[in-house]
Length: 223
Image 1 (cartoon, rainbow, N blue to C red):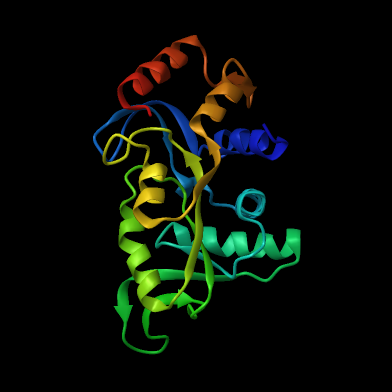
Image 2 (tube, helix red, strand yellow):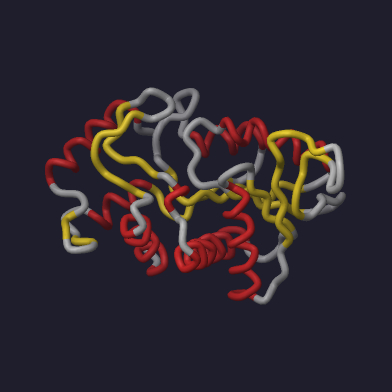
């Protein structure tokens, strides 16, 4: 596993973005882990987050794209900090674009904010985590309606490696539905492998008892 992925896993735990315990997800599933990208709140955290996304996008999709599109609301800061990091790390200017929840009818009108999309743009979609693919179902039609663009791919921070709406994983469903590649900075498999019996912040994150809960969860919902 690449060094930046190992750093990112520990970074998520240190920022209390990735937690282990007993959680009820929006889907109703009882999960032994939970990720909340809204817990990245400081300047230094957001700066590092953008760099991890930029490295993963560069490694996966290269430099041949023009726009980072972050679905509102959590995708907006993700697109911004990653565009900043991309300019810093790779010297390439990437525009950012996001959607509004409601169409604005004065000033900067329309449903999009940030850069306008243009015919021929190559777009990378960016999100925190995808469980059901609902946000892509809502935003990809908006992107395609705005201009004749190419969807280069989707990058999320964590692949939960569990079933989406059907029997496949959510990222696999999005790839099939919209014909674009999908990827994550890290997968939950990599997270578990790295954190099992490892101390982060002075305590073991995944001990034997937690590993049993994780294995039981994937026995029911895994792909």
